[in-house]
Image (spheres, rainbow, N blue to C red):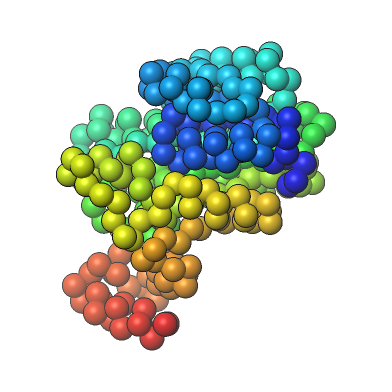
Amino acid sequence: MNSIVAPGRVAVITGAAKGIGLAIARALAARGMKLALLDLDTHALDDVTSTLDTDTLVVSGDVSDLSTLTRLQDETLSRFGDVAILVNNAGITQGAGPWDDPVKWRRQIDVNFGGVLAAQHVFVPYLIKAARPSAVVNLGSKEGITTPPGNAAYSVAKAAVKVLTEQLSHELLKETGGRVSAHLLVPGYTWTPMNIALKPKGAARPDEAWTAEQLVEYFLARLLDEDFYIICPDNAVTSAIDARRIRWAADDMILNRPALSRWHPDWMDKFAAWLKVGH
């Protein structure tokens, strides 16, 4: 992995103008990497360029548009001739419930899942053919693992990203013997523009939330250790709590409990007691 996150090599990052994407860009630039950045927010992306002390290519466009991703690859290879790491970070969150209008769902699926799938379609064949080690990092979510109620479209999309990344990792191992790897980055509660937008204007960062910089520090350490699942804690949820929540969710199927039993009125207290015993 040290030959991937290395000076002179190139990182491609979607959703790079703010939040986690920008924090990853800054961290990789500090390690001497060149950057190819994609975001829909042209003005924010232009502002970012002046803050990064490295050779940076900027492409504006919609991550769910295949032609935009093709242009991103073409311009990246034309300028740098290399892709070491692809970070599929771009995402949105807009509420859509199980029986809401499919139109509300479509944008969620197109960006949060379709953008990842399309980027893999564009970039992975190049990574396989290239002679150098490389990696794909896809942004998942705990909402795609334990699937809490209240944001069904987002949870479905992120669950799909988890499965897609697991499949990608397996196929890349068969195809390249590990030269090209895949990784699932699952943030904890992180104070980003996506989460800030859900709070009252001017709200301060809650004590529970990590900064994007804290998350990226945790992420890079585990990426360099070649972890596949990079499930990040925060100031309120430890890795041990995450593990107990994930185990409980899996046991819903094994023990034939009600769906999402963690939030079911007949099971909520049982879950709380079980979680407490785990501490």
